[in-house]
Length: 113
Length: 115
Image (cartoon, rainbow over all chains, first blue to last red; front, side):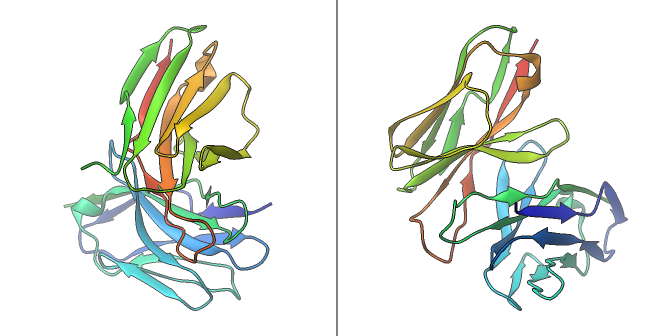
């Protein structure tokens, strides 16, 4: 079945450091890919998405590119802030299929001032 | 206005009790979901309803029974609560199926603690 693998956390960075959170997936066909963010004590919010190969999703300084050849969707940000501290989830969904999101296990990011 | 709301936010109860969690969305969406997030933050889908019809039922114990009185509401009833049911339960909703844009909007979660 479909699955998503994220790098193990937690990740601790200093403010203004470069962030990469790796995400790879296993799926048949061409799923849509997402990054969701969960701030402390809150629900999940969509951070960015990509629906086909070579698409780049971006939002709030975060970026991720849908790489079909490596089945990856790594999340990057050039300069993190304390307010980026959260848990980040990579996820996929098949269009027109069961319509269920399959999540990675989440990566906790802590940014120190 | 909250798009997807859940009540209660916190629920503490004894083993063996029966409890319900309610979810409402005001987005006019057709599809609603329940997800369970365990203590390690792992998220897994439990159920999905489309226009009040069950379309996804993962391998969830039959002590868990979703109920959708209308397409804006999806409630989760749990019988005979067990310690392992302690988790955060998230409700989510999504617009019409078949489109390229499949964003799901999540509620704030209900933290269930079974003692």
